[in-house]
Image (cartoon, one colour):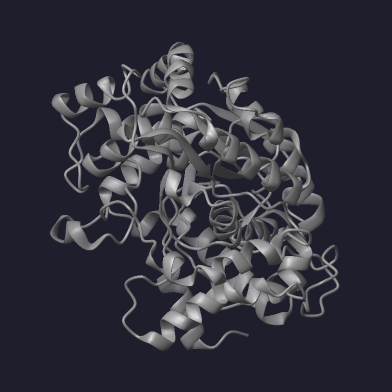
Length: 475
């Protein structure tokens, strides 16, 4: 039995259709109507219900008494609200990228409670849908069906994968938005169209490498670049506390993001980068002053009053800062949201995980479980007409090609894309970045001329996207 205080807190967190403002409600309804060819029978759930504040992951997966009580309360609340507005189909709509484990598991459990409880005999598994912003490709069906078996998701639930971020990138290019730093007018659009249109000019740098929050794989790639003495060849960002005034907090962040991984006995290094991790992170430790001096290159996206804070790299739009960066570099390095493939409490022998009979993911940044997703990190360089090296899940470049884009082989050696082992793939990526940095300006000018038709194709492919594509399946 949940306390009245906890019930009130959960009710306040249930940001569902009845609590949406009219504009948000209209946008959600339009998206669901397009994706599901729906009538108005769908009750839309938005994912601002942060369940981690109430349950640990092991509680959620094991289904202890508190977890069961929260699932039951949420399901009953949800059904009551849906009945009040005469809805009998339920849609969980995730607009952020990828498959996020907590939302995937929690809302599946809520849906399973409703679908299998005799009190709600009007509902079946087919009454429930989850919509995810990841590549609309059969490989993500494979990943989700594996998750369904591993994490006991509702059998018979419909899953929709949609290229939401691709569509958002198009909207950023085509539609002015006064809430953002950059308002896209015809003059801005013309400027973007001309960006890198004539690749005859020698550029100051070889690569452009955006990073913000120091996830393990991002810091690893920065370390590879520094260890190989390539940092002078490019524009590179990372945020390891450059703007933190409290020295102790700055040191704590440095230790958690970098220094602990210079120990070859560190459990995450043993799990993910056992052969190269120690040396790569030692290179960062040995260049601590330089590494800590790295900071985001772009302006903040959401606050026009604080444009010079440098808090974030330019997010989706190609604003003045990103435009200037792209003009100065031959190619980009993209670290997508999901790089490291899943490990679980049952498959990772190096971690000290809470005891739990059931399986749950323990990969760093386990907000996301295995899937292939493309965000503004990739799509902004389609707009910029720049070739790139993509640090992402294995097979990601193949999925991009299946989505209609052209990639850059043989000018960029893309053999790394099909390497399954995460560390081996990372080393191959770093080796190719080094080769590209060592190539002459003359080679790059000739290469960009050869790649121009592909870059123009990618630009036109994304800006002419006239609808959201989706891939629908049942688990």
